[in-house]
Image (cartoon, rainbow, N blue to C red; front, side, top):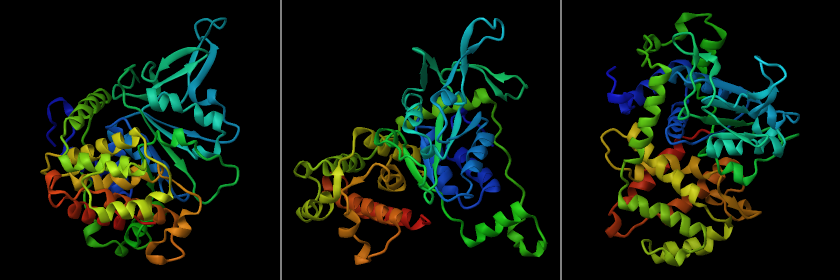
Length: 409
């Protein structure tokens, strides 16, 4: 594969990552896409799913493909903040001198496994690192790229040298079926995550491939002929090239322009959820009435500016990495990132699910119920006035329906 100047990724690069990840994990292409978007826009990921769905394997796979250091922290009730950030300890050169000993958070890809099992004090130790890429220990601030990554060796066999601009992304997991001894994430910390992703339960064909990979073959005839293929050529990067790629991609994503209707739509979402519907002049009276009477009463408090930034950067990154031929972020790009960007940021009134039901059905999967609420909110705030983009809403609705249909609950 030809590399672009400065090792900036493009759609060909993104496709190669998806293809290689698909050789090691099955049925998670959409999850990998969102992880790449978060990585290249300084975001973090909250993964939720039943045990054994490959959350840990996903982080290891991305670490291997992108040549980035990876570490894992198992969150437990007795985990202390110093176990994450590091602490003062005797120096190797002079045992009488105390020096800072960096903790496992000093890496590029950090898996925070079962983050909701730790106490709020320990969870809060992640906040500074996620927001500012630094930690403060005993009054002294340490940048996350300040130290060698000794457990992770470069291609030359030596520790990765310090680099203040090195990538850093937290991928935290939650187990949705076991709530005993857990502590819900504070709203301020939940908002630090760019996306909340539901790990899909594999479909039948993917389950067959997983079984073959993990349990071995008893009969080779069970593999279909088209499954026999050579793995793709690895897009090999050194760690330094991977960091250069990361820095260049960040700027190129920001340079992707949005169409006017997309910009307006994101503003409409903010205004609507903050009960400023009368300031929206790009939707019909009937949609304003629906928002006031059916949707907004269920919202406890509205979206913040970080949510809007997430939506815009997510749409730009989707366009740059995955939307072949597109030069501007549009309705289809927003539709692909909207639900995972908002499902952990929507704070609804108690009992909302009793008054807002999918087609009047009494029993709906809780996550699907929330996603459908977000869908109705997003459709009702999509601009319909021709001056900001004729046909925008129809395109957005079709793309959003497709995105939600792809989600396996």
